Image (cartoon, rainbow, N blue to C red; front, side):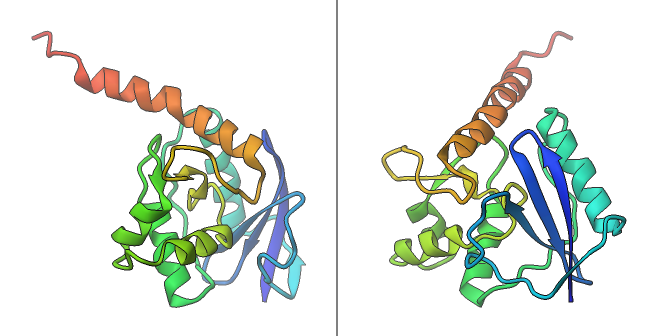
Length: 173
């Protein structure tokens, strides 16, 4: 059994989906229904994981949160789960290419399979597939659309530079 709750965000309405074990999906308003299949679903607005997710996403969009602390329940193949765990490990404000992810998970020749798994990532933003770009540095496919991908990367970029500048300053003492 899966539960859902729609929430309003700066990138449009998102649909949170959870199991009894944790968050399984953050789906886009116009998401392709074949991309993820969490059925059947019952609406449950007060589920603790939904309240925590909504709060943490609000903090992220306000520039107050750089990582998420939520129980995740990845539903997919073992390979997909490896890719999605690699996404979670990408630091805030940084990007990776599909080939870098393939090497990180120990499958350096599986670049296309990594791209396919990335495209089926059900936990957008939390497992930050928006941080995966083409080897040439260009933005590539994203379930929320390339405009939203660019928005998310821009949201993170100034804060990442600010954090770097703050840590790079010489000690005044």
